[in-house]
Length: 241
Ligand code: GLP
Image (cartoon, rainbow, N blue to C red; front, side, top):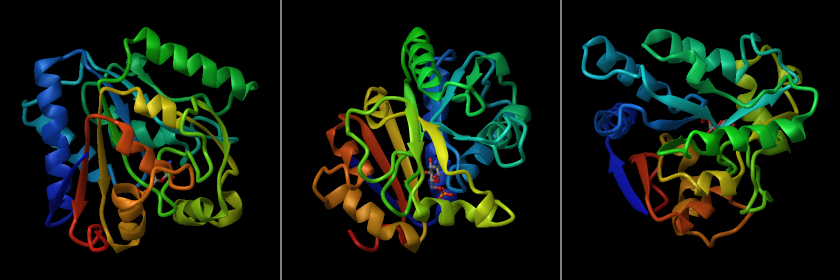
């Protein structure tokens, strides 16, 4: 695990965009694993800037997002489908037929999880996975207690995650209680991982991820088992290391 401490969120975004840029240059049809939340937004803005400057093209990539809320229609303003289309896919030359998210409005979430895993396998697996981290140490929506071998499945959100994410909704009552998420096992199968964290609010989770024991109580700690992980932190998120 490589831990890189940078000055601020802007530097994190540029460094993450460099990793994506280098991969796409070497492999234009790369399979990218993408994340939602506030943290990756700077990286997406930087990738869009590089696309507009003619430095990078996404026309051949395939993407898989980590997770999606269950119970929101796809076109709901806070669905991760909408988030990705607004903040990335519609702003560059992605072929949206090749941009995938779990189907949170399906009738059979268990089957949707199996189908999603099959789609990832059919694409040849994920070359590069972008991750954030929840204040409770979750990755994607793998909440504390998730099996380290878990695959894409239905997961109940903790009250902490619902309250952390309530800022995107009118009130906490509107935050869904369930999500379909790639599992920890699915994430560990990816070739390379870049996890981003900034701000003092992430310092405890980052400390547990990097220095704590590998435990299902801190899902991100499972990344210690992966051979090719880079953790990009700002100084505030690194204060407890
Ligand atoms: C959500 C997402 C995670 C993300 C986390 C942190 O719960 N499912 O993938 O890492 O939020 O979000 P933020 O970057 O907004 O702090």
